[in-house]
Length: 403
Ligand code: SF4
Ligand code: SF4
Image 1 (tube, rainbow, N blue to C red):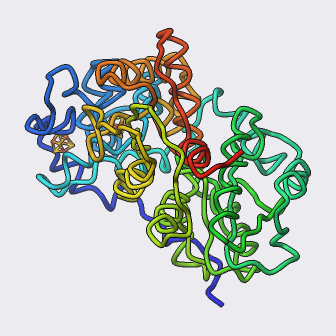
Image 2: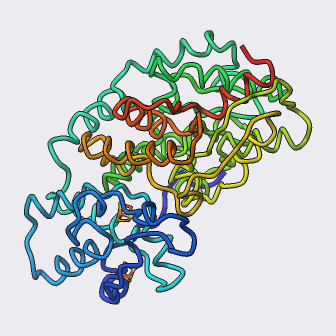
Image 3: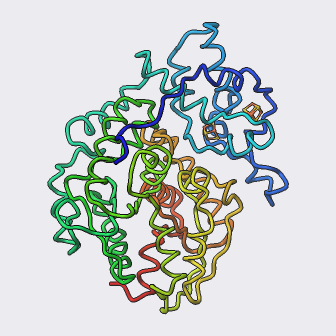
């Protein structure tokens, strides 16, 4: 058995060279020009594009870190606004690192950890989420017992009692939000059709802790992570499949080295099942769709091809690429807890993404992350757009004869 610990902690000061060497070249403000067909879609830092001042781009946030480290400035409400409007989408790092070997996203994450450790971080807007996690072990503040009801509803094994090869980690949003139930049912349908010996943890599943890590509260995150690792390993499953992109990235980056069970996002599992012939999509679709790369699944885990392969397996479906795709994808507006903290700002970003979907003349924006699905739906409503947003699993389940 491996020890149930989480990673050795890094400190902001370890990235001193990164923020000191930032040359303010502004490569992090947008995508590589040669990879974007229209100037309209060049800009790709959500907070910089919205608030425009330098402090809202990675280049400015590197300066905020440097100046704070040297005690040249004090933390003000404006400083905190610049810190917590970052969507932690990683677009800046995607552009900066290959050219400059500098890690701006990591600097921003560690600046948030420093803020919490020193007691000046977090905002009143974050309190409801922290209270929910403290009192209910999930982000939504729902009774955990509701998760047990899902075992019967889904007609699935209780992995805390019965042995199973594969554990499905549902995540807070798919477990509790009525609008997301279709996705949960589609996931279980597909896993059963693929012959997967699958179970869930019911009320023993806790929040993965991703929101806490995004807010910079690593102590609180580790409390969730260590307990989840213990409970996941106790199932004896061979792998754990996550429905949510945030759960997938946290398990891969933080849990995996301390856990016996191997994590994978469901799009990775399902694309392999299609390739192995365990699933076959047969019902034709007339939709024209594009894949919206969730930041956590795409830029962080480099899962770009698998979701596209799933869409390409649906007969008749026409798949096009958005202008900003793969490493250049625009965040949905709900990353880094910024959309939850500043909902109007999050909605602005989502509306921009929906504008891009309209520009590319698609009917449906397909994704596989509850944060993206919810925020993009807000963008659709806000623009009164005809574009739809759909989870990739419901789309596929329909084609393999789901409901
Ligand atoms: S963070 Fe990187 S890309 Fe941005 S200004 Fe600094 S060195 Fe340039
Ligand atoms: S992580 Fe995203 S929102 Fe934050 S500075 Fe980088 S590009 Fe901008």
